[in-house]
Image (cartoon, rainbow, N blue to C red; front, side, top):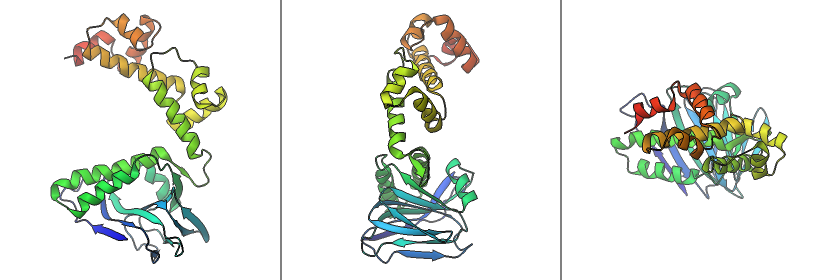
Length: 277
């Protein structure tokens, strides 16, 4: 199967990112590309959901199978293709951006990024919606197409790892799963030990991995979750500040007020007056 769509230049020229050319190939063993330096003036993203293929980079042939992907920056030399005996199931997009995006900064510097990604993060359904909108293109679909592409890039930012990276995908899933439990029960009296047990790692390794994957310490993440819950209670309930502090997991209302003011720049009662209905 070979499906592909070319989109017209969008009427609004300030989208963060926008697809130009996209497609989905399965059972297409003839899929091979070799583009010279400067030929393609857009980013080129490929995600493999099945089968086998390859890329050539710096003279090295890199095997690309299920759960792997690559991004080439604008103007880069590109050479890749499907394995003729086991053609890959590949979803791809050529796109442009108007601003620098975190995922693409390293791509620009390295002249190509090759990575593994988590197959369980809903990327296929995002692509399927992009394909439906592209097949039945209408101008009012442009904002959604831009948003879907940004969602793909954001999902990969959180759920991918360089092929030779130090944190395997199963470790990332374990840490993010622990973070979701902590967020959902932030009122509990969490300690580093109880949080680490969620992932099965020692306190030391949990702390190190959490910092790398979540971009903050477990305690900072817990505090952020508690503050978010407290802010919702402030604007949506008539509970007292002391009751809200307890319901959000702060052991003392005085400490809650201190932390809230440091982060929000105002005490809880002032926040309630400013944002409460």
